[in-house]
Length: 158
Image (tube, rainbow, N blue to C red):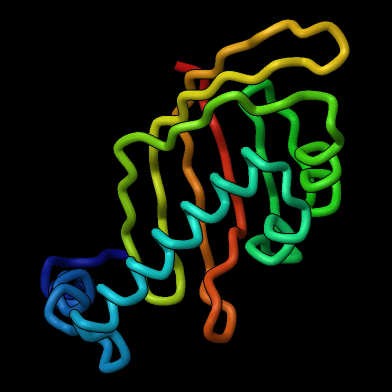
């Protein structure tokens, strides 16, 4: 079967137009004011999440996490919602300090991409041994109804 340039022109033109059109179309449900409000809501939840980690508050962590949560640690462990909350609040360690530095939030429709630098120090309750963490974090938040929920989290050691 031989295909000449004329037979390729229409599909090539269509593909080119498909890649350009989304740049010019802003969905009606995403107005600049709404995007700003969503960014503010996500930022509020990110800060609430940080505070809940410091205080080991299982109730707040549960309210901020989606049921489908996939929580990934820098050592490769992956936890679901129940396991993450149980391990984060088991009392085996105490968070001495935790900062989320250089937080960047990008709202994309019903999703939000959050990146930041995690700097923290914790102390093991059993032996008092202190450990420091220096990580890059990627969180994905999803709008579920009127609420933003943490859907996934991944970390990389720095």
